[in-house]
Length: 489
Image 1 (tube, one colour):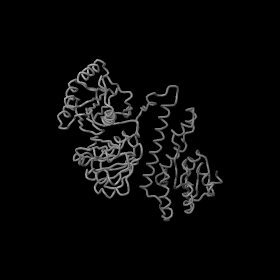
Image 2 (cartoon, helix red, strand yellow):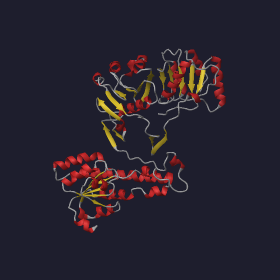
Image 3 (cartoon, helix red, strand yellow):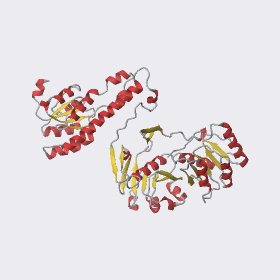
Image 4 (cartoon, helix red, strand yellow):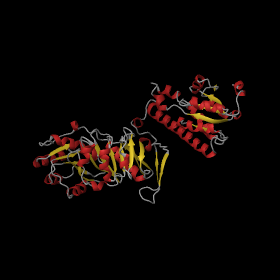
């Protein structure tokens, strides 16, 4: 080792990477600028295959080299294996634990502490920027503030490593793993989300706001101004709602709430069913099919603030001057298994509502049964209402939201708001997100022309029997899903 050290030039680039993406091109650019390449496997193998002069060493030697001031390491390229990936390669937790990249992580920490002399890069996507800097011939590749930012990213990555190892030990190690941790609730809930956007204001102009995490990795903005705090909320709600439907569907959200949806055999057919179009101005609209020019011209009259679609045809963008057009990736809205919300001194966490919408498991306690064409409306209502704030009730006909009431302190108030509306409810179905509390609701629904009612059902069988008996007297179909879909503020 000492003989090899004498051959080193003053400038050195240290590669302690597991990801070899772009290393050869970067290595060539560094050699042209007089950098000696120091590399562990597999980076050393990449350099050897490309006939690039380098010195190879083990991962344990990285700590020694970073501590050796004579080497004058100026650049460190570092990344490590995800502990979860390592875990999947072993049947024994002890074997997996021994194969975690502890030495590399320790070397990254040591490099990050040397802010004045070392710039540490972990993301291969940043190599192109460095190559441009090298080709320009600048004497200083990174400013002090840039080195600080790079060090902060590196230390954040090592913190993520520690969290992943801790969770591994909680769920896999020892004779008695933590069963709650196995089910998705670790002993310590840690979050280190990068800031991705600063907003001019939050819900109100006097409130500051920012967005953290990878939200924008799921979307691409094609046209329109930057998203605001409110438009991000609306986009999130619309994206989650549209994921419920397989048929061509238009889903609308406003002020962070789902407000309407309609399905059809085509998007054009769904649009023709829309009523109260004047109330949809300023909404976020999500569709689950490619948006073509014909329908785009019709939608432009709605004056939606955001339109989300998997794809837009080339001619569509010209029809929207003020709306924000956004494309999304598949599965958007279902990335996380937990929902969290802040409370005084901490957070609440719960599973996302992934309860299966399976009508084969529903119960039909009444003599009257839903008609064939009403089943699609019942399923539509069940999918929609679990995205609406409670207490809520929704009236559906022909896979279209006819009327909606939500965000009420109790079910009776939600139903009163619905019943007092001027909508024609004849021939519709009615759905609640909570068990029906009063038999009187069934009587009033019957008088308004509603033909079938969907609700979760009670745990108390006597209450369910009483409701079913009253529905039979009225000649109404009553359907029990077996699970609540309420959504709190």
